[in-house]
Length: 440
Image (cartoon, rainbow, N blue to C red; front, side, top):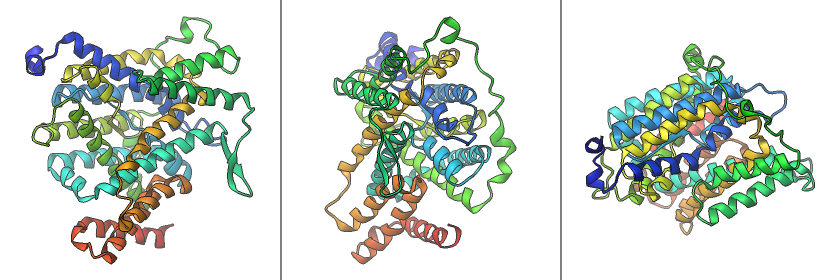
């Protein structure tokens, strides 16, 4: 085992890698409860989303499978799970906004995963990533951050609808809203103090506070904490049985969005984690193809199990910060996700008031991309700004991406920087323009 993971070369050992694997798990364990809440659309009245218990199991299994493949095949201390932003796009833009059944949306996730595998094995995936300008990649990440934070604020009523101004501040005397605000403060304090797993522990403290004040039911026995693994039947295989429904223009846009967001989410995470761990060599990521394949395989397996796109988590940097340097850390993280399968009863404790702070804070972390955008160049600022702005305003990640991609080649052409525009950007700009004209 030591030789396989090259412990001696990286100056590490079982204890260090195990601690790193545990640290990464704690930093991203919130996804086990946030993902079911988002995919089940539990905060939306009159809409039937996915079964939360089945999604909980699918989330844990997809995370375990993807992380294990990453550890054993690519040998990186990088964990995977259903991605934040992609799950929100799945539920709020595709299912709720476009009226597409969640079964068909899962089939779209499966299709994107299969396309990923082909693009990865042929080496095209890396080339496509290079074709999209870095400023737009950064804008997409920041826009998704705003979108996620807006959902968190809206779900608990901190932000609510208003006939005169469209949106307004909610009733801050409402006990549920106060609990969420308390959760935001706690999570901010933990993260500001560089506390490992601050988002996860913030959820735990918020849930306990909710029990103390009577807003959340207190578990009365072991069975309210630990139980048998729920059935996957409500979601398992739905992507396969509904695969024939993806061949529409609306679903094409959905699949392209799944592809696009996961493209750069994974690439950015891989580079960030590898750089922090000193794993880059001559500015390049060794075994990049295997790492990307791990991500693709995780998306396919996750879609079949019943969850939105599975991707690499930037929270893996916490494990690297704790000393993780090899795939053994990922093996440990995968094992902990499997163990988590027995804690599904806690779903009743992790309410919207508990998950909303996580959404808001993760949004804050994602918006940090804004500092890297070249705002002093107008031809860059316009498409980047519109990409970021239109995601929360239209309640659609895909719309934000489309508008940014339409304006980018226009502003760059007018500025005389046409040589810097990759041909793919012209194609995407025309496709999105025609989509708005004929299909919206």
